[in-house]
Length: 377
Image 1 (cartoon, rainbow, N blue to C red):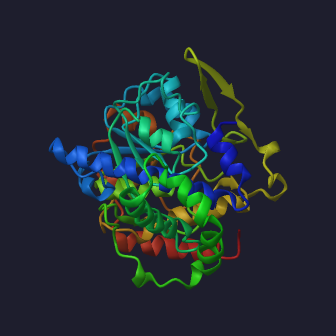
Image 2 (tube, one colour):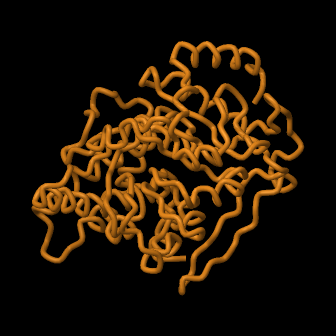
């Protein structure tokens, strides 16, 4: 365990303190990055500044579901954007594929886990928040873009980032020479922060929090309880990719599995294969049921409902989201149109807009699906 992880594990409120530590460490790095971008005439490194960067271009959003196993060999020939999280990124790099965008929101990921210094990441944009591991943010070779999460159910992260920015900008001006503003804060203010923010987070007024912070990092609303796949799909909408193909975004069992093979990278680089997720090892293995022909369990069904709700209600009104997998490997139970990943790659995503579902149609399909399955999960 690294020093960073030990500090997280030693705190009594875990993830919130991980966010806190990272945000205070990261804001100076982000501020320096912004001024560097300005000096070089580059785009402001805020996620929303990249709105439309993939306009009209096909893109793939990856998940770690079991259908990813049979899709990866085809992705080697994909020429468009691939948006994914850290787990899928390592699967791609093992296969010799470089993702275009890597989304990171978990503060527990470390540079070693990401293979930084072993695997080159200069051709991959890191899309992240101020609350992830600061050593990843500091050491990333490629482009970086930032956003702030608003989670309607437990909006702790936003309060942390608000406080971190104010504190670091203040202390940078007045701190004693050689002192670290992060540890000044952690030593003097941690208990007050924990008692005041975490216990009163639900009562805070939305009006107190502007749409962006003073560095220009804007907020993105993430559905309560969302999975990383949904967060990445939100970003694909920001980029205006069209169509968007969901690959490995399974919310059910495919071939008796609930998770694709994963890899860990070590020095060399050498790779260690991690076991697939067999249904017999799933904590809800005794609660399996079928929804629209897909075997699933309450936990995965909940994610499935969130995904379909997000697709049904989202703008733009004419967006096109398609599940892409090999025939027989489809793992999303519900309303999305489907395509063979082999055909998608062969045609480089072109010719599939015919599967587009207008928003009114998506809403009607989802409402019927929701009514049919309202008592499940």
